[in-house]
Length: 351
Image 1 (cartoon, rainbow, N blue to C red):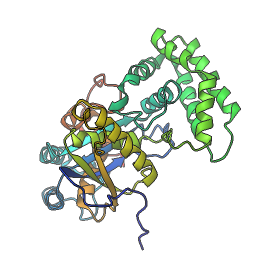
Image 2: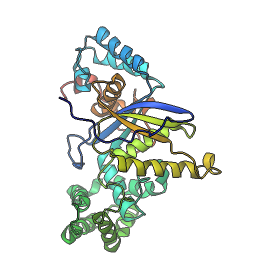
Image 3: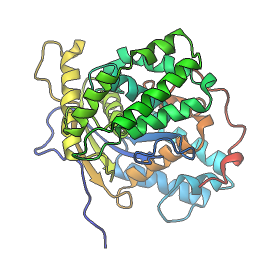
């Protein structure tokens, strides 16, 4: 017996104007456990296929490459003897109809430190609407290597600091552990830019943000939730500033109605302030609504899930065959990757 689907923000009325309906799923979501070395990235994939097109694509994969009739998973796909051939065919079939947003979890945490403690917290954080904060986060992230284990301690201290419990007062000891870890990074000599970011972090400012989190200030996004900026970027991509986006999404606990309303408003504000919408302050949000669906019932979500899983499990293809699908505003270091994986066979053991 299936439980009712939770979350989402279905549109109350029919969506007016130009609209595109997309189906989405993610791979690598681990809740607030953002430092799990087994899942260093999250991928959020979306497709604008019609149901019949998705059914045909899945049927072709099963008939041509002998996959099981059960719901597709990327691990199963990549273990196939014909994985390389199947991947090439799959990506060719999706050209121009799919999009992938990638989130490096460590880099996401760095952007959250900057967005919370050096700027005014907002649901626009981590999206293209707040690019002015990205250079500081990128400078700190790129300087991490000389820090060794101090870097992991610093990020873990931040996670502990902002993992708030309802109605509990902010933890002074956690605050001190965070700034002790910050001071250790400064002593590691990460360079002038990174040290400038670290010195900009202040106890008074951090305590004020923690107090607002404790008081459930709804204007502050959940500090450890990367799904919201990933969804925002997905919507902005498919909207293109010209149409609204109705999202069909596999059930995802992070996408509550309250959070989606706030994200919807932030995207509307961003659209109104863009050059195309400068004369229309009441412009509608690009996010028309989000409907939860079970992937077992919607083949479009199965296709999105398969694409997301491939992007996460085969990081080498992100800057290779998957490059045409990848969001340029992904939360990762935009510098080119070191190199591609030599073969799919190296990855077939992973589930």
